[in-house]
Length: 95
Image (cartoon, rainbow, N blue to C red; front, side, top):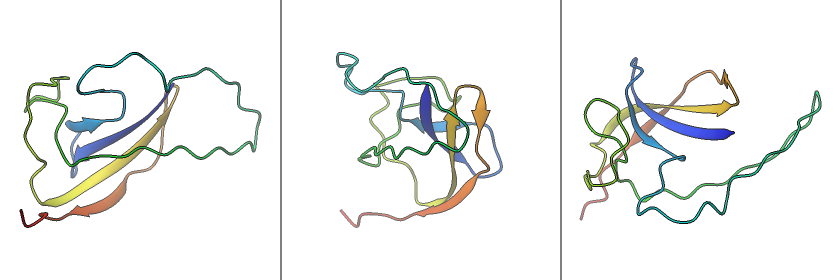
């Protein structure tokens, strides 16, 4: 399984995960594939800026809150392997 996680900076608390489909929909974008050494694949995921996790990092599609502006870490997961954190800046949409 692959996943993108948006975490609070310097924390393990997940505020958004690509595995959390809100609202729940049939599982149409997950697949199983063997990756040979050196194989590369591109994954794309759109995000509307909303949280999919509660304050404790538990999946909760009823949260319906936008992520606060600030610095976060984006982490990719493939199976049990995690990437190094990539720091991103989330800004207000001004709406």
